[in-house]
Image (cartoon, rainbow, N blue to C red; front, side, top):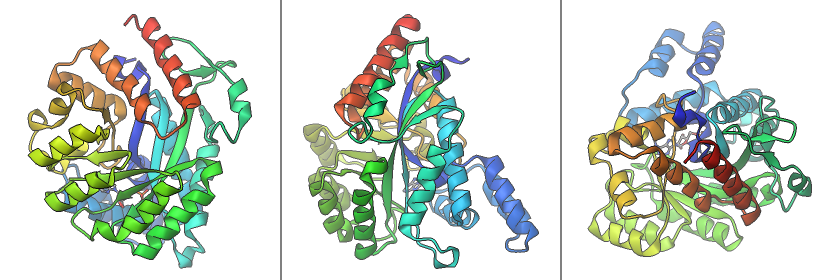
Length: 365
Ligand code: 6MZ
C-alpha cells in the first residue's frame, strides 16, 4: 500500500454530489439514456471530460443532479462515497451536501437528508460512527484497536467517523437558507453538525444568507464558508469579519485578507487539485498552501469533489509532498493537525489523536 494511502487522514471539505464514482455516474446516465430521458453519449462525454473551467464544473453539477434525483440514488451515492473515503484510510469524514426539494420525486429537504443518512448508515465495508457521542454513549464503549494504520474496532473492523454539513447553494433564497439551517438544527442528534455556504461563486450575494448563518451560529451549529474562490475583495473581507469556524479555498486573497486571516487564525480547507483544474490558481507552484503552511497558519488538505476532479485524499497529500518538498513526518503532522479543526467535540478529538499517535508509532515516525 502506498504510504499516503496508509496514513490516517481527516477529510473536511467533500461535496457529496462531487464525490461520486465515475462508474456510478455512467451507470445512472445509461439507465436514463435507455429510458430516452437524456442523450447518453453527450452526457458520457461531459462526465469523462478531464479539464473543466469553474463555469463548466457548475454545468456538470447540473447534469449530476439530474442523475441523482431520487431518494434511492441519493442513498446509494452516500453509501459509496463513505466507503470510498474509508478505503483511503480516512478516519474522520465531514461530508457536505445541499438539501434538495423536488416535488416530482416527492422529495423535501428533510427527506433528502434522511436519504443521505440512510446511505451513510448502510455502509457495510467499515463501521460508521455517525451519531455524536453525547447522543450515543455506546460509542464510548467501542474503543478502536491500534493496529498499524487500519483503524479498527475491537472485532478487527475498520471504523470511520462521519458527520454531515448541510450546504446552502448561492442560488437559493434567504428563506430557503433559513429552512436548511432549521433542518440542520432538527437533525443534530442524527449527525448533522454544521452549515456550509457553497455554489457557483460568481452567482448571488452572500449577504442575503447572513441572517441564516448568524442564526446557525447562535444555535451552536458550526459554519464554514467558501471564501475567495473568485476575486471579490469586499465579499472576502465581510466573510472574514463574520468569523466562520473554517473557510474553504482562499484563492483570491489580497494582502489585507491575509492579514485578517492571520489575526483570526481561521483554518483554511485547501483543495489543491480542484483549484488547479478550475484555474482558480495558475499552477501548483503558485498555490497559497505553501505560504500558509510556512506561516504555520491552520490548514487542512481536502478533496472538494473527488469524483469531478478524479482525485482522492491520499493523492492530495502526495501532490503536496512532491510539490512543496514536505517529508513524511511533516505530512503526517499536517494530517494529524486537521483533528484540531473538526466540527466535533473533545471526545471525538481525543479518540482521533489516539489513532494518530498509535499510527505514528507503527509507521515509525
Ligand atoms: C463551490 C461547490 C464546489 O451539495 O449537491 N460545490 N461550490 N465551489 C466548488 N468548487 C469546485 N464544488 C461543489 O454537491 C454538489 C454541490 O456542491 C457545491 C455546488 O453547490 C454543487 O452543486 P451537493 O451534494
